[in-house]
Length: 515
Image 1: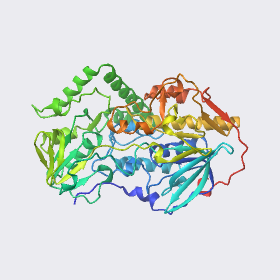
Image 2: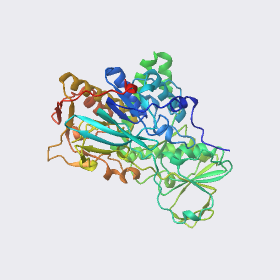
Image 3: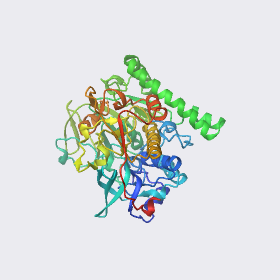
Image 4: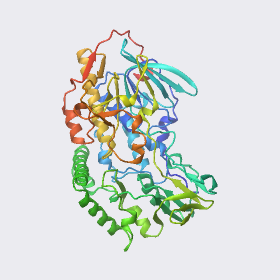
């Protein structure tokens, strides 16, 4: 039996304990117990210890994406010096880390910050209604078919942007004819036996290049079937610079130095690809040629039509995908699908790929703020009509913030800055006696643009349901760490685009579990 090697023992610590329903009122309600939600929990504990807060999550375990996905080989696609928190050093020798290592790291962050008592699992948020009269949100929660309301002063969506219910699978003609097993990575069966089986993985993105080398070890043969290629770059699983610094310096100093170095390296590579795409293309091709068998058709299978970093680049630790190809355990086919057959997939070239298992690594669905229905004074919030302010708030939506990380770098780099800036904003409001804050986009000259300027198919399919970004000022989303560093960490909290207010509030009862 070949099942997904997931779920470390420590993961049960929260899910096994009695779940105390969240009741009453909290100053800050965080939706999502993944990297972003745990991150804000740390900053509230350390920066604003007087604030009451709770973290709610609809799932039965913390970790968000890292607990949701169970397919073989699941790992980070960027280094943990930058994907980890700024406040918590990453001490493993592995810079590219498996899901189990990342989940262990998140559980340590929970323990070190005393966050367990603030986390409420099996709590699904159905809707959130803001009242300008009280400057508070009324949030409807649901658990086991029962719904109830809690209130909060500030609402933070740490939901990421993936639809957790299902991934994206296009229509495949003849799908019902296939007599084998069809699996989507987002719904990976724990008892899937693939030892000795012929497997076809449809797709060439991060998921495909992750699970193929992991499955190749026990599969009879595995084929990556792609309509068009992606850029794939080998990276060392262990970072010699970070590991060397950790031997020479104290833990925190080594983490800070390695993190800063890797941020600079990421930005250099991204800007090189954007400014000199033809040079970058040739460089990537030469690296691929050296990693693959002599005479391998690199231009057909690993030379995309788009420029480097127009879409996110796929990383393969220690060239594991290329090594699987070199050993004959894996192969790549670049072609278009005509239909599924009883025994596999018929291609436009006339070739038929025989398969026992087909994995549809065809992408993800995006969902803004976990699909939560937001209302302000009884009026539904139409997300596409709103502009993102500094990449963390929405125009016309008071006392609301969210976290969306970088598409061209490590997610958590942005999350750290967002959480820190939000704590500065809350402290500013307390200092001046304000109970509400709302960004106002009243400049008609501001052009509206997609929230994420990224050409990946999974992004383009969903961007019309998300808020927009603007063309200038605080309404832009830079996707650049140092720009956000200056804006969110060094820049002032007060801003001409923000409107602060004060409401007469009736004191609210704080839920015991939130104190």
